[in-house]
Image (tube, rainbow, N blue to C red; front, side, top):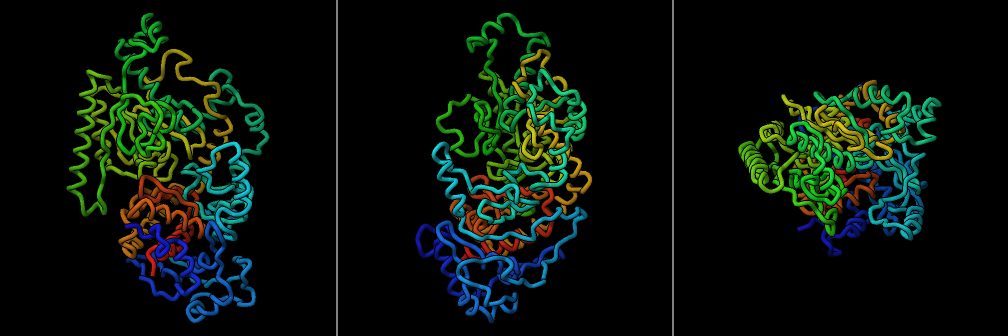
Length: 578
């Protein structure tokens, strides 16, 4: 049963009413673990008090007035001080509350603090606020607005904090759906964009496949080839993750057919038949994908996407094989035998699918995510991926690794598949999001001999390479991969502790680096948590049916993790109820 049911007795509004009737006096469970990295005291920590004092619902602001503060004085004065004369019913600002100087212990990262970053989240209106609401109404007159959270004041957003048009400031742990590399308005990013030497890259958008700029090879060498996956020599730029995967499929199909022709170019029959969508020029080949996978929303990509039905419904799909992805049980150390058996089962089914397709529509490539993101943060062991790679090699099919969401450092490695320690590298690795530009890396044999086979007008955007270079420079200078590993461990430790404090609400803590997720009992519970977090000043998102996913920027440090854990702890407490 959902913790926050549709009935009023356990609804979110019940929770809000409890705030005005003394829920702060409820003694909460301790949330501690051995070691120096975690020491949360639930509602008594300063972030929880601050978020409780300045939060609202989507329909009306709920502010703690002078009477409420007075009724809780005996409890609150132990943990915070305030001037009662400055607390009123009309507004609530961080300057009106003085919080205790009792920071939660956290590890120290060598990464320098983000320049002039805000101290914390700050909520001032209902969500969405009045300005966002008006903008939503206007926007809704000419496009679908169902996915809009709020409108953003990007000029005021800074570091790990995103600010909306109503002045609400959120700690952003979603990171523009995993695409924000070094926070908002990083000085080095702004410096690169405003550099006069880059002005020509912004004042016209070149057709890169035909008319690249004079310094294009240097820029590619200093960016994409600087962190190219081991064993991959070619880099092709694209616009986004979906078109990166779509063109990776094309590269795999061309490679497969070229092998069948023993390296010879297409025949005249191939050229003629393809024009009427017929074989042999339009061969009946397929891509093997996994249940729960997400590879984009273009037509070919959607035939390999199996995360949410709403992405696929009403759209024709190719008759391509789908095989199960491992469903690991947590904690991993308690289910070693079960997880090994499930991975073995999935590998056997994948190989059986490749074999059975040979007489129907042969598999030209396997595509897999290192961590299934949109499908629910589903993991598998390095051994699973090593054996999957071996199966691909055994049967002569391309092995495509989709690093659109995992690439760029959030797992603690620049490429998540580095953790697999493959002897034979992937044939193709796709990327986008934190890389700013889309595209794919591949082995040389996956480069078509003819021109215009992997092509479009723009072939990416040179301005994004400018941003990518700034990102990579900052990442190396500030040791952001190490920061992500340190912060990720601290964040995981805190979430493990909270899963013990709220065992019926939070489960299956998992992740690499700061690429982390937890599960809730139901979709409704997960969605309620996302809503509560947003009300309390955290921009977060879901994955799969019941998972909350964290995808912060690489400048997300332990102090930000501490703020998130405080707010998350408070939200869990509210959901669990008195």
